[in-house]
Image (cartoon, rainbow, N blue to C red; front, side, top):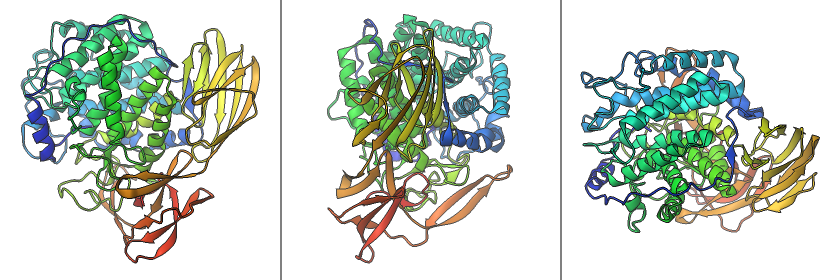
Length: 640
């Protein structure tokens, strides 16, 4: 998510755009649009099965040890407290390999992102997985961060001589957005009133110092990544509106998007004039472009404005063109007007989390099950496929067709690139993707179940335990499954009163077998549930599917999983850490052989493998090859 200027083309496109943005007229707020589903309080849904096991494993791995792996960034830099930034601080060493340039000013706020995004994932995983020791660490952190709040409510990284007075690149709103997401999550998990009061007071402090329609938070000289990241302060405002029903938060979110659209900023993909321009092609930093889908969504729901609706639809269509077979949105790290290619365009782990978060918001607001299909595709394939299958580390950048992981993209491209490898930190690039890898599963779990009126909706499937209140109706549901590896489920329900249950039927499902009577709704099975105990057995039928992709290629799926041909690889440990058990690793193919699918030949499924007939592009011999789920692979071929 943090940006280093390795792409000259991106810089040329970006800085050229700074002088040519047409300012839209202020979008006047109308009545907020109704939301189809409502979020359940964080913690009502808890992972079970492999999801819980993965969270516990991560808490013993990079999620639980990142402060020990990069102590200079997390422990020694008390950026929200005694080390707040002042006019005297001109530079900061964050361990990244970078060229000199104006963009280095962003290093000043970088550690706020590393710390807060890491804490966000750590706190959520600690409570969702039931790790009591990690929960105590989380509580100690919260007590310490609350102690940094000033009497006027300020929570942030700037001393009084700089706060709200910055005229150039800065992380004022971004540092707050990342921190306040931690605090709101902790509040929902614990109902600690101190945390709620701190967040409300801190947001009020922002509104006083950046008064609505009377200030311009995104006006700056030579803006860069931090200022543009700050637009997702709307995440905080959207959740505060949902928790309070106070319209001022939505009005302020609309104000922020409007101000962003009319100013010269470094990340222009989301600006309203550019979205409405038929000739504009997305070229920005991928993470920004995918996280900015949320501010646009909130602005539309705040206003109901027809032009914003048009922009929201068009922006999503553009993102679809940037999505690889596994659901990964391209940008390694910049989109650079490219289209999705399984070999030539990679995706960043930060982008995986941000797009999942954005689609989760759209799922909640629209109720459209297609977003759930996109979330599952991304989470089960691109995200799981960018985790190391046996070591606690992730790939900062990854391609679907992954032929080498030696730092550069498939062994070529920019020789200064280091992100195509596995690491528990990636400090030589930026410690941003590892924190987000610690967030993504928790955000998936939170979106698994939602409320609709007096009923419940199973939107994202997987092993979990739900305990919630529908008014005065206490409901618990145990969802037993090994999904996505299997497609059968047992829902064991206890309810004080009858309620309506909806279970999403994925688009890949060819049929459904259910032990309980149900009605059909678009994309869902709708079931009446009586008071007392109810057991529902459900199975979805799946079949091997062959999907066309770019360059006359084909990829294969079964159920929610995309399949790949695994490639033997040679491992090299290129860096070790003072913390035992952690290392950076690269991989080269033992002998690279790629294949081309023989059109119309059968593809068969047996025991979690797909067998296809394909031509070896080196020997020109047609042979059967075995495909396995992308999750669990290192080097692989996905498109044939």
